[in-house]
Length: 346
Image 1 (tube, rainbow, N blue to C red):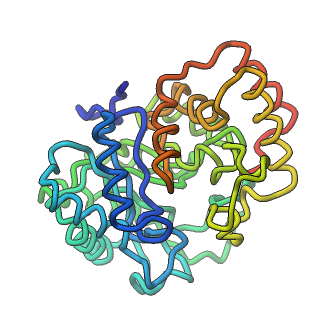
Image 2: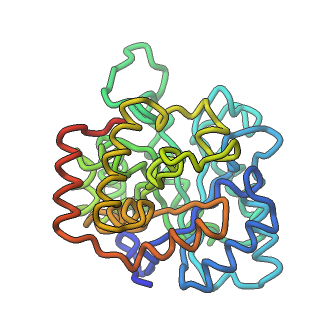
């Protein structure tokens, strides 16, 4: 398994990260433990979760993913064998059962980290991330930024960094990261950190796949120059890039079919673009899933590709993608489609 350095740290993380947001919803505790065991046996040392998981967010399952990881840590006594990332939930009208209000202030961050540590049955989290911005901006499927002059948000990014520094000194977290952020947001955190001698942002976890390459506009250069690399989530577009939906192999339990409210990867144009990428894989005798994952992992701004699976067969195939190097012919064919149908699933 190959490694990349996490930001400007001494941590070496595997280029494949195990995502766990299905644990507690589509996967049972036993399933989750089996996936975690297998991932570590294959050499993966990076695991990502969040306090709001499993997904989709529901009061009945909130925190279930962290609890499953926690029982696994307790049973295996292996906390020193891997790097663990989690996230604090941002504002959302539908998630007020987690905390109300959902804010990134000292009190809320303190409450969130203590809850995560308890569920995870660990003393520390290696990478603690803001799940999405507190301010109104263009994330979760929005390309263009529309400023809201009446927005009540007051810039509290300095307070966030001050609290992160306190948590680092207390040994509860090691590093700080962001997720679903914009170029302005990432640079703002970096500038404040440099100005005030506070923890720098070591990573940014955003969507990135063949159907959504918006990260390349603005954020890619920042990720490379500022050493805040991408932790790419949804690298297979909710499984659309596996080909199972186009080949009629998806069933009612498949993510797009089961959770129709998650429509980002379920439009006609998105499916057409995916079909063209699937044709490239077929022409070159490649697994569509592995081609999609290998593309994301190969990008110079990607620190780690977050894979997720609901079956062990999917997990094994996804992990095996790290052995695939895409040829110039494949990359050229991918680029041709991207130029003709750019980012159909922003």
